[in-house]
Amino acid sequence: MAGYYHQDDLAHFADVGKNAPDLWQKFSEWYAAVFAEGALSEREKSLIALAVAHAVQCPYCIDAYTQSCLEKGSNMEQMTEALHVASAIRGGASLVHGLQMRNCAAKVSM
Amino acid sequence: MKPFQQALTDSGLAPLRASGIRVFQINVGKLCNQTCKHCHVDAGPHRREIMTRETAELCIAALRKTAIPTVDITGGAPELNPSFRWLVEQSRELGRHVIDRCNLTVLLTPSQSGTAEFLALHQVEVISSLPYFLAEQTDAQRGSGVFEQSIEALKKLNSLGYGRPGSGLLLDLVYNPVGAFLPPAQQAVEADFKRELGRRHGIEFNSLYTITNMPINRFLEFLLRSGNYERYMEKLANAYNPAAAAGVMCRDTISIGWDGALFDCDFNQMLDLPVASGMHIRDFRPELLAQRSIVTGEHCYGCTAGSGSSCGGATV
Image 1 (cartoon, rainbow over the protein chains, first blue to last red):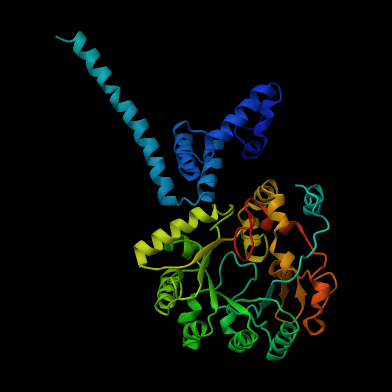
Image 2 (cartoon, each protein chain N blue to C red):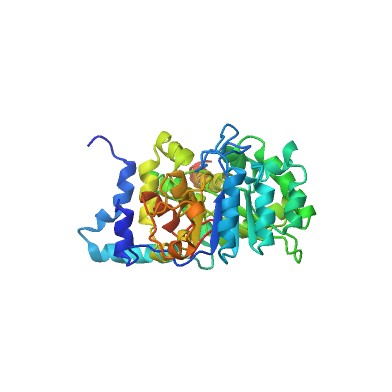
């Protein structure tokens, strides 16, 4: 294997369903329903997906949802703000664990 | 990728045939004051292929033989053709609705003094390209400074009554994606444009049409140069929508080239794919053209993807 991530693989996502077609079917239906227009617009859902894609650092998802956001009419300013939301939560999540550090230190300190 | 003809066959639409002629689209030539990166015409200031008065007269003679309700004048920048105003006047005298596909900035060029007023006087519908409501995206596609000039031209059109409620002067905008992706839902992006152009510039317009970029000429060159060609074509083919295919604009449009040759659409014209009969405007036979078989190719996926695409925007 020349490498782990290949752009062309994205088009073959459905291949992972080959050995568990029922589960893939359920996933596909649920996935489509999740991204359908609802209380949130399709555009808002794509922006959330783009932010989450960066948080979970999935290159396939970043590729797919960058294009999806553009195709839903979002611009680079909006997409960059979504990226910062994901980054802020990641950064904040680390920082807020500083309270655990402080609690641990307080417990063992005089 | 499945051949387009196969996609048509699989959805029961082959052979694709015209269902009449509702739009008489005249491409008056490739001369333009802009050189947009996505232009399927490959138009620009250096182009010299423009319709002569003689051919324009043949167009009006052909139009007179029919009751086709709409004359759609495109280019290039159609206003730069010396016969543009004559074509508009003649078409209006025949009682036809006239559309000018205007790039906006041409209205500010010295040679076009009074063109906006002329369009308003003749109640010409203006359909203007504006790929986005921000300068960065617009200038990236259409050239540096184009956004600012486009806003100025839109304000001028608004001042004449264009796009204003109750004026009867229609001003529509055209959104093209600034890259290798499909356009957004027309209704959603129209709402964005109305809100943002109104809030930022006080501009009003009637409708926004989303048009998919066609893999022809400059946009094709961009796709190839940027390594996006195969992916883009797959995206179009995967998004093939039989409902959009059933409603493609070529079924009720006849496209006339700058030299009088007839085509099923402006895209076929740029690919030098004439109507199957090879008919010229001087031999115009509307009764035959109204039921002609449409010449198709892989580029047709551009009009059948997703919500469809036409000179009048989404078709589904």
